Image (cartoon, rainbow, N blue to C red; front, side, top):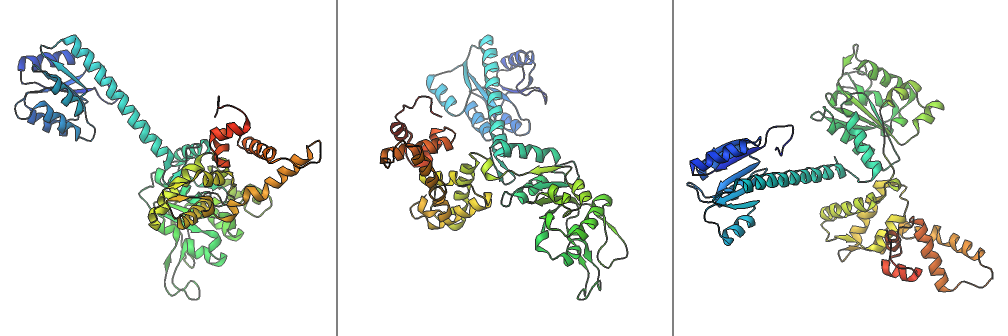
Length: 468
């Protein structure tokens, strides 16, 4: 019997001042494959647990030095508290309740029934193993949902997190592609944090923000007198990123003439500062990011094919927000919490109507646009809740301006007569349109419409059975 498979035997500390019973317990538990230590003093047991992490403590209630309840309380303060079984010859209901209230897993009375002891130990260790598994799962879930600043529980984001972990230590350059605002720099930072270069520097440069004639000096550095105005030498960003990761953001905007020099650095691992007469070795991992279609660009000769093929060996695609399902809800809630704290605003929630508008808006600017919208809403919210009127006008008016008129035109064309539809008919038609748009999901449709699900069922003339 072992609660910790693969690492070490399960450890049991037996604390009993009756030396005969102490030896009997050690023999009995040892025969079950457990690693057992014995002590007869409660105070010594408290100190023992600090440097010998036990999985289970089997302790008498009455002990010299410190009693069993004191030992139980001390064990609860350990980083990983052991399971705990108390034994006493003076068992009372009050003592049992007190012990269980303070965290004991079981309470046995003397004279001790060894069959009962074996059953209690097995059950207690199994329960502890299950608790540890749940704790590790929750920690893993928390890490997977918030991955080095990237937030997402959707399948596309989980797949991205897995890919980042797989390529993190492979060492070669990585190409990060995705629409503007999806979080490509955050992906590069996650790649760096997951790699064996995590203790080194992370340096980012926006290639579109540096004039082409200055890019070589910015990246490779220059020596004094290399060009007019170069009174002193300057380290480039490759040197600044030594031992770490250099992100070349918007690499698709890099001039063709400089692309050949970058390719040589990727092949040889050496740079030549502007004006220098010798090359210098660099130890830098390159991450390149772009919102452009470099495959199309290289075919159109707007980007060097040889550099593209060198970069695209390991490609990470960052999904747009519209492909991330319920991640929008998760991101919106996180942004409300972060921005309300930063702006010192007492804003705690988003109303169902406002959330419905956010869910139906396509967010061409992706996560960055969502964050900006939430920032505006937090600034304007006055009573702790973000409502539709606090959102930008483009989000409030999106469904009204783009979808409803076309739907009414199609609705009118389908009618057998020319009379205008009644309000009830228009309402039912629009509800069914929203329901179809949400893939039949009544919960989401009700949220978009700003009504409860019971109201939705009533207006559709259906019951709630089988609701999603």
